[in-house]
Length: 134
Image (tube, rainbow, N blue to C red; front, side, top):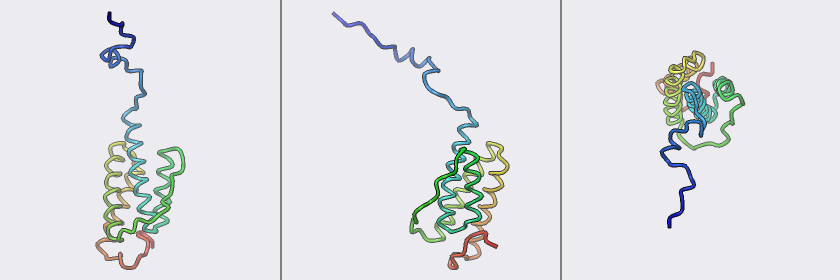
């Protein structure tokens, strides 16, 4: 009358933890940090700060094991908005780097936050010069 069930029960499948890959906390934080730094790289490229972009790209390459894709287009955002975005992204990267105890990424993120804060405060936005350029 009824056909027998041929698949595993959903309850039994939930017990099977080998059915899908698991990542460690450090792997998740590494992926998250690489994502934040990649987004920061895109904004930094758009701002035209090549030295800072190269340092960020190096960190992303270390985290991902491959060189990052570079920003190809412009968003059309005002420089002030780009600096605010970059500051926020650097802040997120700093939090994740601290959670990971990644000193190099934390220092880089803090330096970028300082550079974008200084750019916003100094009014360097009208000059269109790269942030952090000496």
